[in-house]
Image 1 (tube, helix red, strand yellow):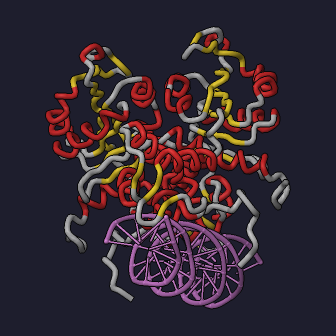
Image 2 (image 1 turned 60 degrees about the vertical axis):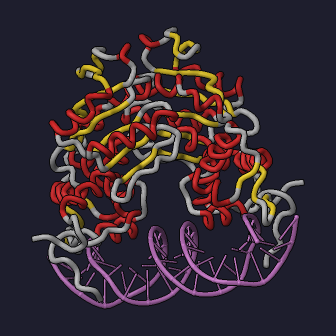
Length: 224
Length: 224
DNA sequence: TATTGTGAACCTGTTCACAGCA
DNA sequence: TGCTGTGAACAGGTTCACAATA
């Protein structure tokens, strides 16, 4: 119907975007096992979705498969990485170097998947000059200069809840436009700034809800 | 249409279930500020959703508000906590006491929101007898006896990806029926076992996707 | 022949707008 | 009068089933 922009920039549904990294990971695993071609059925099994959904998702990117054959693992892997934007590294700053910040700083998955932690910041002077994951913990006051120096656009908040909003405000003021928030609080940011939230206790509570239902109604109907 | 079970056990949409913990947190904040009554508009603002969605969500639980007035903070808080199932504590085991496991063990949000970490397990004997967050790290072999002793139904996996599936299998075998998985891998479990996944690098990749789009198309259309 | 790519049907979730009620 | 609770309209996401094709 509508004319689409010629090469990229089709709009990919949000639900699909959230699954592309899963497919990317699956393709990397397959490549490491030396597998060079796979069907939608195989890749879907690896990624934990059904094959119809996988094919629909991939169809938003283009026609990268071969009918009767399947997908070339290396080729598809590159196409997805390019679409997500992780063919080059994104510089990232982490603010709040407590237990969680430590874990994040040491998380190898960042570096291997298109992200590079360029600075660790903490408001507590007692933590400064401590070295974590090969990086000196610096003052939160240094945020602006670090963002400017490394052209950072993604920030990670791992502070206590009470500090998170002011950290976010400061990040936005320095030019950061994407925030991953681990603090258990709702951030308000201007339009155009992306926020994603990871909340450990919320995930557990969702599990608890379903767990509770299991014991209440083991079969199908209600029990007295 | 269909007759519903008399008092509880209506089926609440999954999207609503995922937001109930957010409302619960907002209500706890309001209560701490000494606020005893709030409108859907106020509570929604606190929780970062719009008021229509909030009211629709709450309507699945029952009619706990008062028209013309709003909601009683304490009362609604209790009703949501009961619905989720966090009026009593859930015992939880954490397997994999690396950087992330440390952070999880020390995370105060678990204890304060209906969960109690009863054991920390690790396959590496070098970590055993280390004390983390007041708990001795024990052998993974102890899983079965710990689950039986504390009647654990929720397990947290914070191991490397390669170990996650076998840990999950073992958990399921001991009777755990809900798993929170931090390892970057897709778990396969039998029907009836709930799994939720938290994947740090996937969240960052989703941010990167949107970040990339911002710089490619600052206005509305495509740029040459 | 085997498998992709995709319209169409279906289902789930969101928003609107207002009737119902304190 | 003001705010909740909710049917109805809408939007987004998933699944089906099959035509297209290497």
